[in-house]
Image (cartoon, rainbow, N blue to C red; front, side):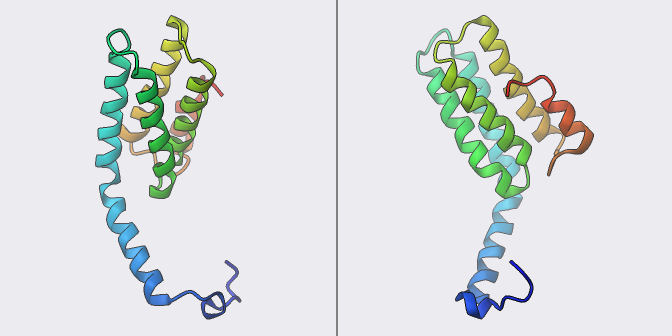
Length: 135
C-alpha cells in the first residue's frame, strides 16, 4: 500500500491489524513443525503406492495444503514445488515408474527446502533445488 494512503481511509482498525500480525507471527514460529509433519505424510503416501489406491489423491491433498501455506510463512519455494507437484499429479493420473521418480524428486526437493531452511527464493541453493524439476 502506498505510504500516502491513510489506514483510516481504508477502514482498517490499527489495533485489529496489530492483533492479526501478532497472530501470524505466532503461527510462523510453528510452521516448520507443521511442514515437516506434512513432508512425512508426503513420503508415507509415496510409500503406499503399491498397497493403497488412494495414495495419489492423498499426495495431491497434502501438496495442495502445503503450497497454500508455505508462502505465507516465508517459504515460497515450497509453494512453487507444491504447485508443480499438484500440476504433475493432475496431468499424470496413473503414474508409471518414470513418473514416480519425478514425484519422488519433487517431494525430495520440498525436503531440501525445509531441511536447509531455504526461506524466500533460497538464493543459489533455491535455484539448485528447482533445477531439473518438472514445470
